[in-house]
View (tube, rainbow, N blue to C red):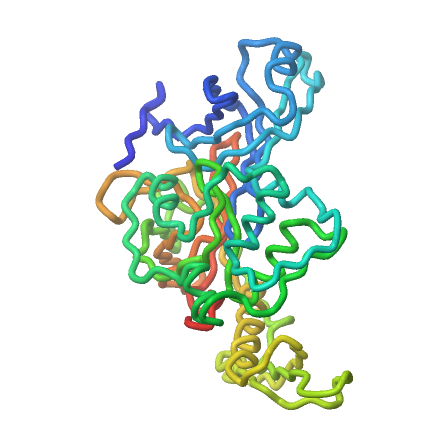
Length: 390
């Protein structure tokens, strides 16, 4: 159970704090922090409080200073600073420090030579990328359960855990990924990992300690929060200050067909291997099919899953709900006080204006100040299709 202090005005102290060099805890005066699951790495830009001169801050916290970012006293993510920006437009010199979590190393570093990993599984592939970018000392996690609870500061009831990278590998091939995994010259290590992991419905992100997680977003949880927006309610008694609802079918499909190479070197020697229909788009009267060619699909089931995943990707891009909430915490539905609003959790949304009353998955969160607000981007649970077993 998380406990938060209170400020002089009696409000909850959920301010953003940053630990620099593992010892100095500073409260940010203004900040913008973005953390997500499908978009990496997590990043921040914050202005430190008064007490030191700009020169002192610049000398004490050069680029690559280790940090841990916290909400109240709950850690959210760790990494290294990228640098700072100093300005004196308001009369006094101010220093804003910027940083990202440890996946920034994979994001920034290019593969320096063509490499092949024969019969490597997904964990071995990610560890190779970690070694190449100086992250060999980090632990490779296969689920997000512990990280989710620490960041939220609340119990999170998981109905069913997603398949781990090891389980996906064993399910797909019995021992390992049987095709040769290739890293191409000039692509980033993060692009290399994502290119191969996405076929298995796996993603990379960092936990609060800076360890690497290879797993799937998990929509199969009980909601931790409840967000309500009542028609005609005053803003100060409604926990939603602003909203943006997107339901755009422009890039969605009524169906997807997948072809695969079955012989020869040209695609006209092909065979229809699988397809998937979006019943929602069909019910709306759309007849808009999309065709893909997937050279890696060798079975009807693999091609069908590829089609299903493409429809889910389009649906996630076309349907989202974004709320701006006051503060960074919300009452926990688990009955243990307040919880930090964090990604890879589920919220129950009751919105009279948009006619929404369902559980939604929190994919990304942005913490801002001033004023102290949280921008939450949510997706439908049924659009979270990543693995063939889902």
